[in-house]
Amino acid sequence: MDKICYIYKIKLFFLSKSNKKSALTEIHGVEQPEVVSSVVAQQIQQSRRKQPSAEELIAGILKGDKTALSRAITLVESTNPEHLAKANEVIKGCLPHANNSVRIGITGVPGVGKSTFIEAFGKYLTSIGKKVAVLAVDPSSSISHGSILGDKTRMEELVKDENVYIRPSASGDTLGGVARKTRETIILCEACGFDTIIIETVGVGQSETAVHSMVDFFLLLKISGAGDELQGIKRGIMEMADTIVINKADGDNIAKAKLAKTEFSRALHLFPAKSSGWIPKVTTCSAYEKTGIDAIWDIISEYFEWVKLNHYFEEKRQNQNQFWMMETINEQLKSHFYNHPNVSQLLDENKKAVLNNEISPFAAALSLLEQYFKK
Image (cartoon, rainbow, N blue to C red):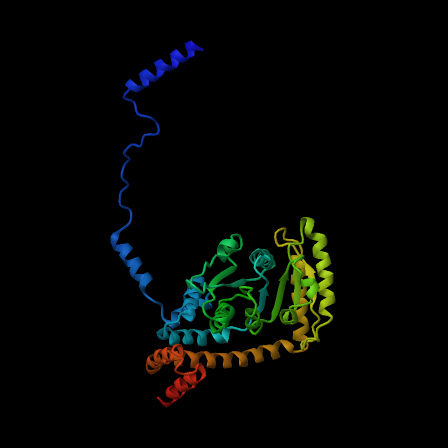
């Protein structure tokens, strides 16, 4: 043992005296030559700053250019009043090429596996020749007003598919994040050649009503053991659903999922008949194991055959168009009121008066409206 220690000390001594550097020592490398022309780099930067015209965006969308589609959607989502006219021109140019897809709304409480399900469902649709656009709405913070927009990260396999377009959008101040911008985004995606549009809600409650007003088929994702089976319950959302899917039917949860399917099927019989004449169905699936996905598409296909046969499909779309015309009027009136230069000053004055209990909120509101219509 002493001999080994002695040899080790000798080696350390000679290593300390050696001028040879360790392999971990960083050495000065050879500088790489300049391979990018500064002139070319400047030209690329200028081209990126240049905003395409409405005609160029329309032409790109009709050719299936996803970059043009993304730019057009950004234009539609912009709150800058200067972008409104250009956005309307793009929508007008794309409208004759729209309305040729099936629109599917997907909702469910946070944690039900919406992103995992949409990825498995989207991959199945592209495998049978469909072109899929996923419009995912992320909730915006009421404090910082920021949004994660992480849907592309959660759908890492689906985002690589060339026949898929995923557009995450912040919900902003609108209920559930679906309003005119989502409705018009559907038109742009249809004009770009996507035949299946999937809209994912934030799953917070009332947002489902807005989604239901712009889709053809409404799919409600559930999980077993959440207590909803015993309530039958959540009547509003249950009555809107065209099918209920019990997700996470895998492993030890298979038996619970089958029980939940039975309970939900019984609950659906308590609800009034749908105007479409369609009887909602309940099924199970595992988005993680990708089982039961084909059966869900079979149900959706059966639904569309049914509503097109009895002409409910066209009737519903016509009613939706009228609904969104009225919603757009309401939105534009509200926007014009708050952006009016004379209203902003009066608004601050009335806010202070309400805070000091000098006037009631209702009287202040009526006063502002009277002044607005006079001016």
